[in-house]
Length: 388
Ligand SMILES: [Fe+2]
Ligand SMILES: [Fe+2]
Ligand SMILES: [Fe+2]
Ligand SMILES: [Fe+2]
Image (cartoon, rainbow, N blue to C red):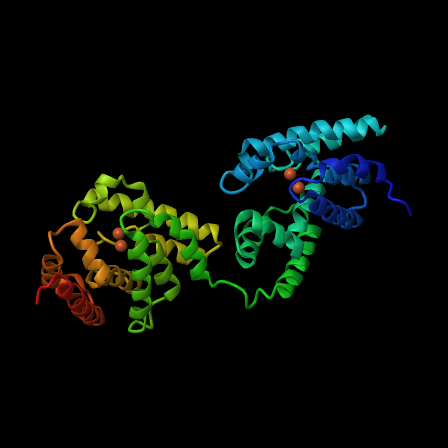
């Protein structure tokens, strides 16, 4: 049987060579057919012509701009994205009118194409099926391969964060959710995501990293994180799923504190509070973005919002986070940065930190690890400085 839309495919072809649409559109078209089989009352012409033509506008917009502005934060609102919808609607009308499709079919298809990405709601049952088919190809190996490249993510992170965390929840019809889950299972199996997958802390780490750009946090936080893992051995009852994200996220708020105020950070309560409050908000955004457990997310936010200033007593998890944060000060890099921030020499930093050790460290294992770290720092730094 010949393809009833062969003429439309031919007319669309020159416009499908952008942005892998000559892969995306045929695959999505297949899902539109599968969805139609489950929704026999939907208008077949509208759904199939809608999916076939929905992305033709990408061929008209600036190719460079697609990669520059079309992906990443705010992608749905970007100008190029709106432009591809407007151009697509114009081209769809042109093609369908030229091929003699009835006016009401043309109007319905054009209305679906116009705003198909930026309009979150569906205007008709046909629009629901087009929107669902547009997304379903992403759950295939091909979709993961192409889209993870666009987003600069590894396949496993793309699958968990984008597909499971976002796209799955945006599907309209139960049929589409079923298909998505079927494809997801196959993709996970074929790409061996059970083994080729970052653990959740690596994903939180990657999401938090851009926020470590100020105040030596790109050194402080990864090292405090490692210390935190060590400390946890002495506190097996502490909930690691609260402690580890909390230490990774505890200082993300510094990015919102002006550079000149950061220097007084530890000694000025108001500045300290500012990085805690901003940090708790950002931590919540990051964790919810990753689909992290809600109850733990709230506890982590509470720890971040007070990690420097909350008076004791502290919960066990908060104690471990604070110990790791402070323990870092006694390490070689902690001393170096302490000197850079406040003291004229490493010897003076060491003398000051030594005098504060028992006050700052809250637990016996913490005190012991701090003493050991300080001894190592002394050996490394004071020998280098020529002091004994
Ligand atoms: Fe699109
Ligand atoms: Fe699309
Ligand atoms: Fe802090
Ligand atoms: Fe810190």
